[in-house]
Length: 108
Length: 120
Image (cartoon, rainbow over all chains, first blue to last red; front, side, top):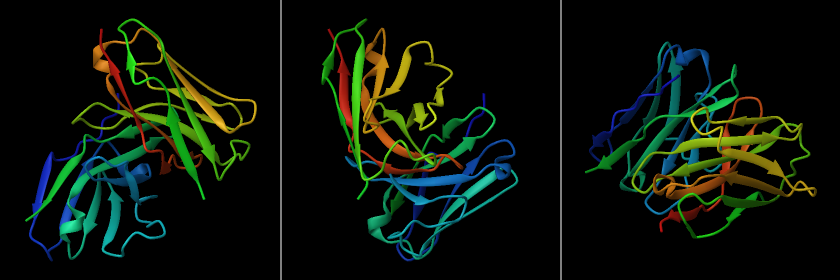
């Protein structure tokens, strides 16, 4: 079965750039999304179709997807960005939704 | 304004059947580009996709759970139901319903989630 792999945790200093990766076989051939989830809250879509930002998502959130890796980049990371981040892809051949295991972003 | 709201039992006994309801507003399941998906999250763990349904009644289920799941819509196309049979304590989780876009599987709006505990 297809799997998406994320690092369990990433740490960043406020104001610096945070990068969270998501790996899967030929992931670049699929579209990747990213969700932010803060404690006790529902996930929020922050990047879709590899690099598009929904309305209301700050410009410091960006995404890329090529080869076997999708990356969520947060430029000028703020304390409010501390959260769990999940990547997600769509397997068009099976119409299945695929989630990564999540990455806890710590801003310290 | 798109909203989704889950409802269902808070506590379920092992081996029982769980039925969850998702009430949607701000969009219709008659729209060919949109559907509703169910996703769960055990306490402290990752998101797990369960199933989805689109306007053409196209359904898809998680491979590992497909024998236990049934997804369906109400006649008004404003409700989506998820039934899970033979509950086990490992099924304890927050269950979310969310809107999914057909083309790329983007999940763009989420409900608040409902915590279901499986315990005797």
